[in-house]
Structures are given as structure tokens and as C-alpha cells.
Length: 302
Image (cartoon, rainbow, N blue to C red; front, side, top):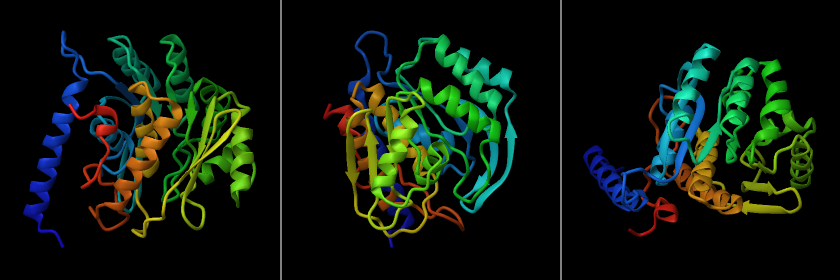
């Protein structure tokens, strides 16, 4: 087992290496970083999911991360112990502060909790004409805690998904959004077509909950694209959905296509799961600074 001192030295070296790679994202004139990504989500004080996981992902992939907090949670690797909802007017104030000050290149949403927050986010997405929107339709946590009210689900489907460029449900979320049971790849295809009817241009049904090796399915409105990987035997990992969707948003912010962004996200999350960390007494969390990570995919060799 790697000694703690050796681990700290390795992580420090990887952070320095990543920062060197990111230097090419800085413009020559005003010091403004390219690839600004806004995450609109809940806070996970344990650092495994939510805005904390999003910001780590965006940073490692060479983007500049910003955040709007929709809820504070008391949670750790064992589960969610409590949720404090941020007042909707303050969510709107955060959005105006960020979007009104230079804008962003991509936005991703995570935990939105209630219908009025979903509607408020939709209003600001339209007002600021956000085109690269990734929706991670978080409905329940991995421990079964509800993270979106019933009317919030309706608002997500009828208001937010039609505004999105990409929606990234896992299989249980895809079952809720499509209204069908998913037991096979053909079911995943059918569900993605049903979800696309809500107005989203690209649907990614993640296959992590299926038996066997995980296969993610991208439906772009006309064709299906499969992204395969070997199942990594590390047990349950907390925060993979947040990390995956944040990686997609980082790719889009760097002007990559949807397929390129999904390819990047699949490689990144596979590496983060393979090196998943045991930080508490429950599930593991993704390692955002593994031995092999893919910052150069966006940052270049600079």
C-alpha cells in the first residue's frame, strides 16, 4: 500500500503537471481562461459529489469552474443526513452574478431539489441564451435519499430538458424520464428516443447500473453511439454521475463536439473510478488526480 507521504508527493507532482498543461488555456492579453464552466448544483461537504466533484473535474480538464449552489447538504460516504434548500431568489441572484459578469462557455445542472428552483434556472438559461447546457437529472442519491420533489421532476421534464443540449441519466433516472423499464441495450435505445421527444438534442443513457461491462449509449436524434469500458471491481463509487456530466460540460466548453466530449468523459470517469479513494466508512469516491488522467485531451501539450 502506498505510504501517505509518497501519496502526497505524487498528488503534488500531478497538480503541478496539470497546472503546467493548463497554461495554454490563458489568453495572451487579459489573463482570461478559456472554457468557463458553470455548475448549478448542491454542495457535498464530503467532497465526493455535487459542486465539489464538478469543480475538481472541470479544473483537471483545463476549464475554469464556477458554481451556483442550490442546496446545502449534510452528507458523507455513508449517505445523506440532511438537506437545506437555498431560497429561490438567492439562487437567481447567484445566477445573475455569474452569468452577468462575462458569461460562460457551458453550464451543467445537478441537484435542483424543487420545481421553483428548476423554473428559476430555466428562466436564467433563456435570459442569458445558454446554448451548451448539460442536464444531469439527479432525482435520488445513491443511498436512496430523494433529491428532487415530484413537482420538481415534472418541471425538469417539461421545462429544463427541452433547453438542454445534452441530458445524462443513469438507468434508474432514464426509467423515470421515459416511463419504461430498462433491462437491455434495446431498452436503453427505446428510452433514449422517448426522452429525446421532450426536446433535448442528445441523450446519454449511462450503463453503470446494468449487469456486465458498462456500456453508455448516446442518441443524437438520428443515430446511436456506444461507449464501452470494462467494469472496474472497486465496489460502489459516490459521485460518478456528477463527475461524468461535468466532464461532458468541460469538453463542450472547450469547443469539442458532443461525441468528443462524451468520449473524454468516459475516459476520465473510468480512470477516476479505477483509482477511487476510500475517504470514509462508506462508498469510495472518484480520484480526480489519478496516475493517468486526460487533461492533455483539452489542454494540449503546452
